[in-house]
Length: 146
Image (cartoon, rainbow, N blue to C red; front, top):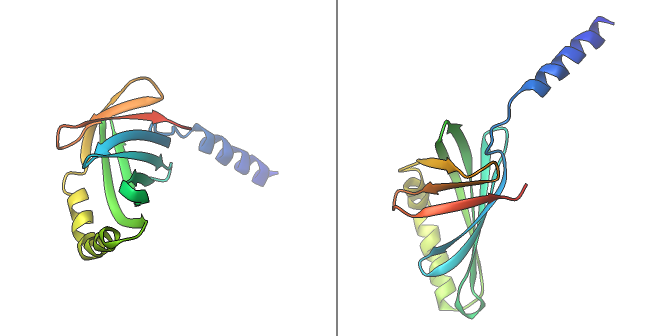
């Protein structure tokens, strides 16, 4: 009987833990180097995140970039740390081959640059939308998917 009471207390305490308002899946559409990019971000309750971005290029070429790492939200300050990036190139031709080579040669630098300014100030626009201005002064608006 003591075990049942202890288990009930643990379950009740676990249910009382407050989840960060940013936990969930978000989407945004931006223009990157003149190309439309659609991103889906998933902020997990355990402090990890995944950002999947799809960019459609010319002649059927596309890039799917997946960044993974950790996040922390303190007040209106969102800090992300990129642990890894994976880029998948779709299509063919010399431009795709060159892009694959450049990515392979510059992967460490891409991660380093992503972590150079890891904190942004976010502005909540209700429970299901927020915006942030990145280090280049560009505003990004995110909408909750779930």
